[in-house]
Length: 508
Image 1 (cartoon, one colour):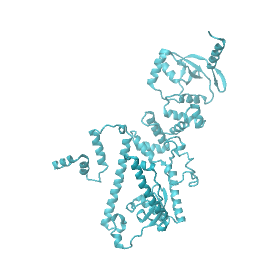
Image 2 (cartoon, rainbow, N blue to C red):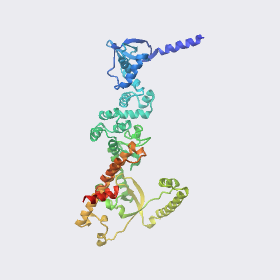
Image 3 (cartoon, rainbow, N blue to C red):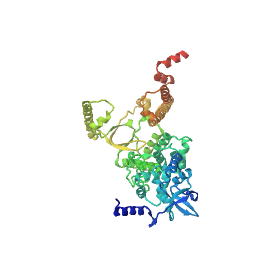
Image 4 (cartoon, rainbow, N blue to C red):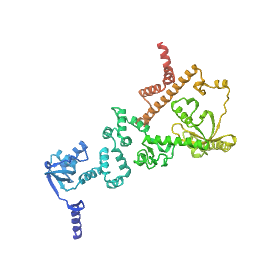
């Protein structure tokens, strides 16, 4: 039995469902079956992509059950322009429908586009670059926080999409076709359009995620490892603090990890790094602290190291390298946690770990005693810095006295002698050794890249053994990265065993 109260409640619900609020005024919603021929898609509609397969599925559903939710249109020049529901409209045409249930509304100014954008963004299958462009449009009127509330999305997602909107069309293509992940797209969008275009041209015709990742890494800087105080607003006054800087990835959304501070403006980072180095030089001069670059004589002739040495000399400092001094650092007291981490790959029992800790503490006490008595033993205040990052730490330093006997200097090992102190023949040897060192470094770098590429593939997670083809590929990789270090036959002999030697002898 239906009561009067329940009937009233149903009528109230029906009336509410049939009204809406547009421009602040209640408007009665009337559903009309309008001819599809009088309805047109909006050319300004922000949604550009429609999945054909999903359209066909919706079309089949409409043939069976009809359009369950009316579309929304507005009148313009004798026609009806779709505001919301273009997908239902397209599917109805595919289903051969002549009419479609419609609600006609009136909108003012730019309300139409805003309504379309918000309606599209509330769908589940929004194409990421279209979503980014739509959110960028809304950002002209609303803050990221307001947009996130309107759309029911997180602040971080909104900020990431705002950054993705800055991606050039050449890279957006790769995001749309699924070759490029959204996170990688956001990483590329950190750079200016001109820089992005250079990255695109460098990459070539085929998309290469590993190459793009490497380019991003080469042009971004981990602020947590910076040699300067990232909160210092006065280091470079025009740039201000890195903590509030818009080029700090931590302020652009969760791009590199939760709260990870990464500088995306290389010129500014290099300026601050150079300024911090000059400040370090001035401080060492003012406080009479010996400034020691982490360079050994063996590497002193390298171009980058020569630049550091000349900077020190130009600022009136006498240059001492690691070979010229004895250094005592403030030791770090060992803990069982540190011991466990150090020996994590060893199957050590608790007793064995405690034994290692006991030894480490004994060494620590000796080092601490040496540190505390450093000045009594002729050590002075010093600062050691890395020649590339300029990160430095305070230490005690003592200059090693060297014999002034020319014959002693001349008889010193070749790698410890300067080029000017060598005979022409020895200079050739040093030059050749330097080239070999460069080759070693380059080979190691290439091999690290190959290892990283392998780690990024799905194969790294498989547990099956290598096939013959994979073994050959791997061996060739080892060979190419060791050419110049050994004779080719020696490499093959080491990789495959005696069979190579037998084959070589048999063919001679």
